[in-house]
Image (cartoon, rainbow, N blue to C red; front, side, top):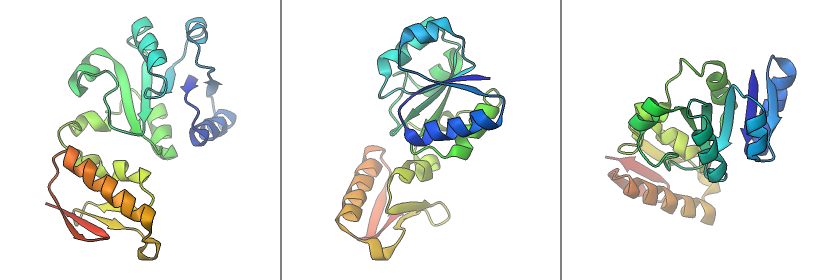
Length: 191
């Protein structure tokens, strides 16, 4: 299987180097040129569309049926449409950074049979089902689905950066119309 990585994330690069050495994968780390894409055929392209949006658009134009794993640090929509349009017209799956290598590996292995988690949950209306994925980028806070709460991971690490993260999280919740109550300076209860 030939994979093209269009991203400079060192964690993803290192992971792909490991699976390339241990399996039947051939990984190309692109210099982000369309010529390279045109000259070769790839089974899967992994791309951070927020950093390489023009390249992403060119791939979609050249080959709408290209298997794409679209990665980003946020939930912005890659095709500026909606999840249903993406499922009907393209062969894309979505992952949020920071990428968990097991998720990436499973998606590469089972691309055709796996649903995009973010389309299943209707992410643009309700982010609660993927909140634990979203909160991975925050180093101080986690989400507990059982208690429907966001909490500080280590009370000893309550610093200015933790306070900033709390503010960022509450802004995110507000943007997606999720009702919440800040219980104290370290915990948020979703309503």
